[in-house]
Image 1 (cartoon, rainbow, N blue to C red):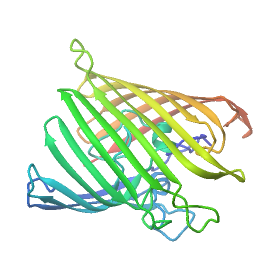
Image 2: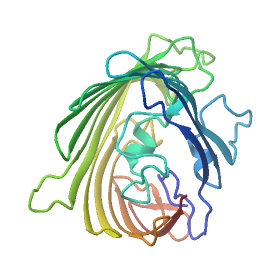
Image 3: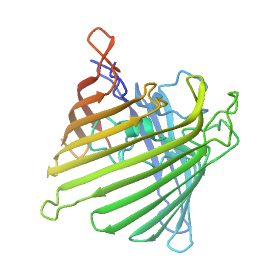
Length: 327
């Protein structure tokens, strides 16, 4: 098994990762109503991204309702958009997958898989202040929770800043008690705070086809039960991607990342993880994308399998080919 991976954990196997069916009507104009519905069926992605309380099977399902929300564009100023339901998190550089926006790499970063949440269920409000500034605030059940595990709520927000053409900055936050009320000793006063930054920029005027993007997310949580003891914990990660579009149908992306799981609360082992990923992408047609990829993972500990299946390696190198059809 490919260790400490999110979707591409199957070794030496063809996989139907995901079939996504989407219905979308945007609430573009003030006074309009819209909606979004995303259904996922497949062998990897639906099981991993499921929120607690959506399905009864604790082992997971091969189907997931990724998003389901209704939107209303209130006629206030430039248009105040209100979304109610289940929606993808605003945190992080990468997305789960979708026809609107593909990641630059096939495999997901440690940051995406182990540092941040996938989805939220609640209410969010977005407002475009100007061409250079946008605001978003939300109240939700928590991290990946359709049915809340306690009586407290999560509060989050985002500030989007666009200082010039080709440059975007997003400042993210979410804070919530995430400990289950049913576990003795857990307390709703124990908060988890996440602070994040995402950037996307074209830094060189002489190379307009070069894009530099990345993200940093830091999380701290109070009084977590770990190995029989309670203590404050933290985890954080940074990633950066250089992408160069050689032609409209071919680009390459190089990603570097570092993930510190200082207490082992996210991976089960106290460790620093590093990874380098190289992904060329071919847009074969307007509807088909093919992406081969080479990735190397490194750890301070022996957390990767050797050829006999024993955890004796501190390095893991994988190769993959990803194909996407969208219409």
